[in-house]
Length: 111
Image (cartoon, rainbow, N blue to C red):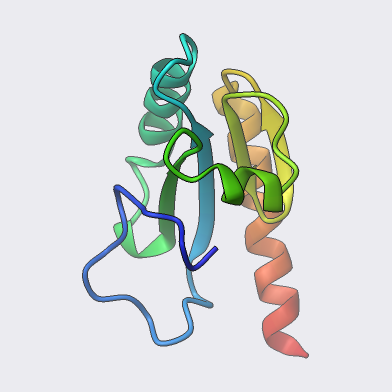
C-alpha cells in the first residue's frame, strides 16, 4: 500500500504505525455513494483522539492497482483490521470493527 496516496495521513507518523488503527476507505470520483460513506467514517471517528487512527482514502480512479491488490470489487469499501464492509457503513458496524481491530492490536502487542 506504499503507493496509495492518502488525503488524511498525519504529517508525523509513528515509526512503525503500530499504535494506530488503520481505516482504509476505497472510493472513486464517479461513485455516488462514496461521499456519504466518507462522511460517516469521519463522523464516527471524530470523537476519538487523532492519535488513535490513521485514515487512508484510496481513490481507485487514481490507484486502480491498490484496489486490485486488496480485491476490492465494489465501492465504497471500508476496511478496518483486515475486515471490510461494502456500501455506506452504519456507525454501529464501524464501531464494532474498530473495537475488534483494537483488541487484535492489544493481543498482538503481548506476543
